[in-house]
Length: 121
Image (cartoon, rainbow, N blue to C red):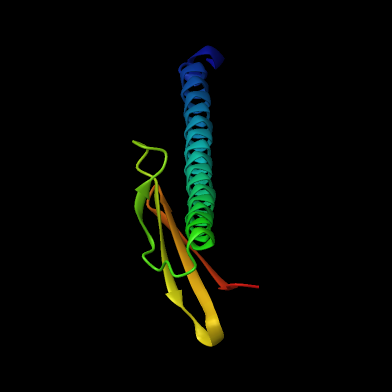
């Protein structure tokens, strides 16, 4: 009689272990996917920040060469073919200052860096 009661118990234990293993694997894969997404967003955020800084430095180099320059830096893809870009605007500010605004875009993330400079000092 005891052998009859245990019939199929190994199959149930095996199915239970497989279900638990599958649940753990799904949780790990989901966690890793979330981690990779966060890393990609962080990388794009940092890249966009550096591109905004590059836009400001590009504009400052133009201002250093010609203090009357206000054309701004057009949308520039950097590096070429990457899909990442920067641009800068240069406008006169209050009391003889110049406001330089750089925008960097990487992977759908845009960062803005604004700088006020006083020329001629």
